Image (spheres, rainbow, N blue to C red):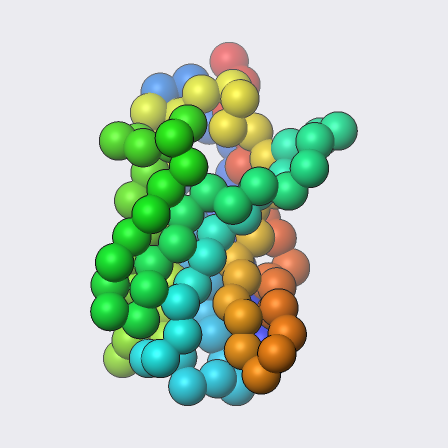
Length: 114
């Protein structure tokens, strides 16, 4: 199983980014996909989940600003980040759970600063 995340960068407060995650080696259609983030000095937290059926869930701090989506044809998961705040600065990881194990992408850094 391989997850490859991309799309991070540096933006000013209020800016937007779109993170992408390409999945290989799994039956993508039947797996939930997650985005986590880890800010400096903090524990990794679950930011958003999308189920195989397309249901979504978000941590309260990003509701109304972030949108998770998926493209089953291309085995992609996305996280659209809007109205970014400095406290959104973190390394973002895509994740899935399959065959009894968690799998992680390599992480992509999002920096929000003026």
